[in-house]
Length: 156
Image (cartoon, rainbow, N blue to C red; front, side):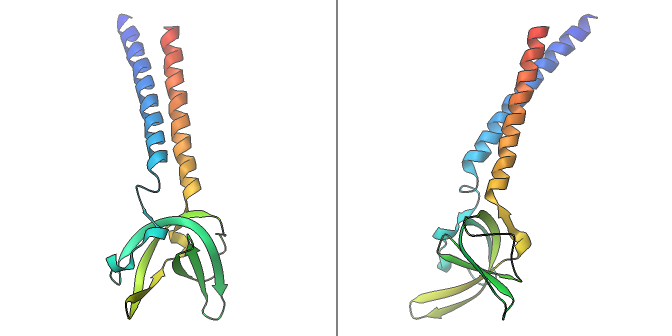
């Protein structure tokens, strides 16, 4: 019977620790995402990338337009980076905060300027706010687990 008491106390402490770790993890992920994980679309330096390079960028969609003649959607992030996706991209709209994997497909040097052609696909575009929601859920879940651990500890 005495062993159950120690096991119960150990479980309560474990729940508190697990809960606090989840809260801290969620808050750290909220603080660093996406700026510390991905590159800002407004700060991409074309000279740092070769044709064929893939990177993940984040930014706000400032313009999006579909050209039926070429069956391609042009997405402009942060008013600076133009990215092209095949087909009519309908899921995303102006003002959406997104992160996406893009590939430098081709580039053209004219004098001292470089023009780059970046491409992506609709399935490679993701919502920043949706990901942040998951981090909030992790933090809230951790707080609930820690409170349950504290409540059980006080009951014993």
